Amino acid sequence: MDPDVLPDDASALDRFFWARHANPKSGWSRVASLPLLMTCLYYRNWRGVAVTLAFVLLNPFLFSPPEDDSAWMTKVVYGERLWTQQDHDRFGYPAVLNYGNGAAAAYAVYAALRRRPAEMALATALSMALKLWFVAEMVHLYEAEREE
Image 1 (cartoon, rainbow, N blue to C red):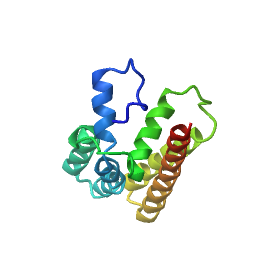
Image 2 (cartoon, one colour; image 1 turned 180 degrees about the horizontal axis):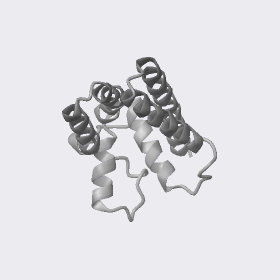
Image 3 (cartoon, rainbow, N blue to C red; image 1 turned 45 degrees about the vertical axis):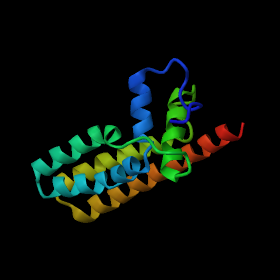
């Protein structure tokens, strides 16, 4: 992992987690997890729900660290790590994107359980769009930090 991303006092577990999570395969495979989860909920496939949730939890540990930070998704993760360590307005931008993402995801779960496919699809798409907007901001943060 890029040594500038983690503070010197970061734990070994912290370094291990973020280094592996920075692999683009980790991030992109997690993107697909929300539509899969909603589909499993819609069809009441509880085994699929359990497998999807287990994958999301284990995902950051499944991949090797990236060779460099050239991949967009690697920059996302490095930027997110920097952002989590900063003192920022919890209700300001870009944090508000995560709140919208969470609300849309919660409504997608509701719509899936109520078997409202159009609402589920729209809420899932909105949640993903807000998440991708947020992570794009993390790339900007990382690149700005690297330029300094």
